[in-house]
Image (cartoon, rainbow, N blue to C red):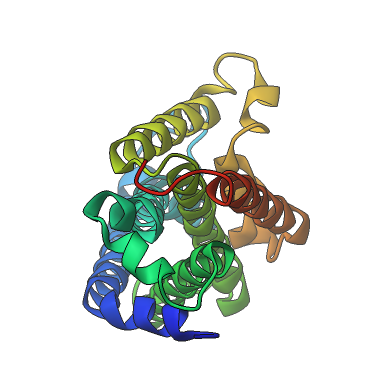
Length: 256
C-alpha cells in the first residue's frame, strides 16, 4: 500500500484531469492568440490615454494582465479547490473513508498520497498550458517572451493550484465536511483575489503581500523568469495547510 492510494487517485481522476488540462490549455491558447489584434487596437489609442490607464502593450504585459492575470489563475484555483475537497472530505461524507482506512494505510499516508496526486495533476495542467503557448508563440507574436519565462509563469500557475488544493485538503481533513471545504476555500479565494486586484487602488500595497496571487504573479515571471522566493512562499504555505489539517485529522473521529 506504499503508493497504492497515489496511483489509484491518479487513475480514478484521469478523465477529469485530462479535461481540466486540455480545457485550461485551450483557454490560455485562445486568449494568447488574440494578442496581435489587441496590440493593434491599443496602438490606435492616444498615447496620453494609454499612459493614464497604464496600458502595457507588450506581449508580456498583455499576458500578465489578461491570460495569466485573470482567467488562468481563477481556473487553477477552482481545480485546486475541487481536487482538494475530494481528497478526504468527499470520501468521508460518502462513508468510503472507513473502508479505505480498514486497509494497511495510515490517515497521514492517505492524505499525503492524495495531496501528491493533486500536485502531479496541477503540474500536468501547467505543462500542457506551457506546451500550448509554445505552439502559438510565433503566430501570436509572443516571441519577446522566452520559453523559460513561459515555463516560470506556468510553474507558478501549478503552485497556485496546489496552494488552493492544500487549503481545501487541510480544511477537509480537519472537518470532514465537503460543504465547509468549498465555502471556506471559495471565500479565501475570492477575498484574496479581490485584495490582490484592488490593493494598489486603495493605496494598501501591503495587502497584496498577504495573498497567494501576489506570489503567483507579482514578481512578473513573464519578464523576470523564475521567482524562487515567491515559489517557496506558496510551497511553504501549502505544506502548512496540509500539516495543520493532518494534525486535526489524526485526532478526531471519522464520520462523527
